[in-house]
Amino acid sequence: MACMMKLGSKSEVFRLHGETWFCSTGLPSDVTVEVGQISFHLHKFPLLSKSGMLENLIGEFSRREDNHCILQLNDLPGGAKAFLLIAKFCYGVKVELNASNIVIVRCAAEYLQMTEDYGEGNLISQTENFLNEIFGHWTDSLKVLLSCEEVFSQAEELHIVSRCINSLATKACAVNPSLFSWPVSSGGGLSSVQSPESGIFWNGISSNKTKQNPSGEDWWYEDVSFLRLHLYKRFILAIESRGMKPEKISGSLIHYTKKHLCLLGRESSLRNGNNNVASVSTISSPPDSDQRNLLEEIVGLLPYQKGVTPTNFLLRLLRTSMILNANASCRENLEKRIGVQLDQVVLEDLLIPSMGYSMETLYDIDCVQRILDHFMVMEHETSESSSNSVVVDEEGQMVGANNGGSHSLTPITMVANLIDGFLAEVAPDANLKLMKFQSLAAVIPEYARPLDDGIYRAIDIYLKAHPWLTDSEREQICRLMNCQKLSLEASTHVAQNERLPLRVIVQVLFFEQLRLRTSVAGWFFVSDSLDNVQNQSGNLALARTAASNRGATGIGASTSAQGQVGVVDDMRDRVSELEKECLGMKEELEKLVKNKGSWNMIFRKLGFRSK
Image (cartoon, rainbow, N blue to C red; front, side, top):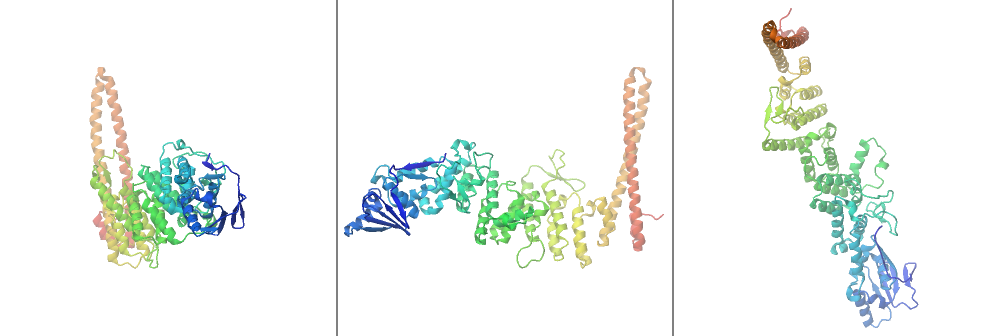
């Protein structure tokens, strides 16, 4: 059950008329206490016997020989609501304290100096004892922390805020949170608490659903999301200092951000196909300054460990920071975080629209360039400190020395594919300068691309969208790809691509012809070698079968010879396929010769002969 404390035993003697409270004890009132717009007609003795401050104020009026004194307590923490509870305590009337009102009563008691000097079991000591009991419960501690907003400066001075945060942080970090007297929502006479976002809560949690017991590692995410930013920040720092896992901290920050950062919530809803703006947010959007401050604080709280925060969430934060015009350090922080785990990004998330008035291109190329630069710096540092050496095979593919035969792509290869895809997406933009295209593509080292088909596709799209490029500029952009690392399909496309410079086409044709010749020669060499092995094995088998005492050995040799004959047949079939491919390429090239008669000399140099 929720924590509750009852003080006093007398029945209710206070009644309200308009904005004035009267105490019906049968004696005339001799003191009036004004708290804001509310007046209390009371008696001197019950007040001065419990409060040092009221004793001093009443004593000053007594020296003036005034029969009726008027006291103004406009600075009283908690206002008239707190003073009504204190007045009832002074008269011995039954008072009910709970997690919703304990903070204002404790601060008001401190303000009125209701110490043990004015009676044993005075209000300060009783409220302190009750607070210590509350700190053993998660939900009531949360309610107390939410109520501190009303009298924050006084609650901070009395260390109520820090004690609440420490209590919540300890429970959030606990392996078994059920050990901390988890209260079950049941009414219990507790009044509702209103969150900073105007959501009504009962016993510290949302009234539209009842949480019976914590379950799962994220059981506390929703509860702490009702805290204001300055309290939530202190809570996150507290659980971080207690060794909370970075994954949990990141999960809580993501939950909090999605709930309070309106632009991020709308983007998520629209991307999921929800076009109903009213359903995205039921409250009015806060000012941009508040949203910008929220974003900058959240970014500063995110854990720095790689892979802890999803890259798609970081990219959404980056886009939102551009819309809200966040400070440069915030955007740089996000770009570095994204760059560190760029190999986890998908192409769709990397397409960041350009912001501002001077939008040269549809997508923000400079931002992607900075993110890629951060990744390359990290990759360079990792490669230097890594004990695994990097080897580049004959085809230009990067292979780890201790990869154990794994065929998984390395991070640099994944990033190379990502950037090639990004370049293909932005290439149709007529405003994309050649220098920017080259600068972004050139960052990727040559060993990172097993094949250059991706960069060739991007170059081809760029040339098609920019037909006004000069021959020298076409030559310049084509230097970004390695003609020796194109697949057969890409090489065939190059041979028919009139947008490419003649030198590039000649290079591709030359290397493809050289590759075919090398492959065919290699297959014939292997075939001849295996034929010799077959003959030797056959002679050995005949010699062995001639001896009757080694019949079993003869059968094994014969079986081995038959297997080798099958291997030779497979190799010959492969050679035949290569010859057919070579013939197909010759026919394609002959068609080109008819269209471009000046290429006859080139083809003769490459070894082609017309029939």
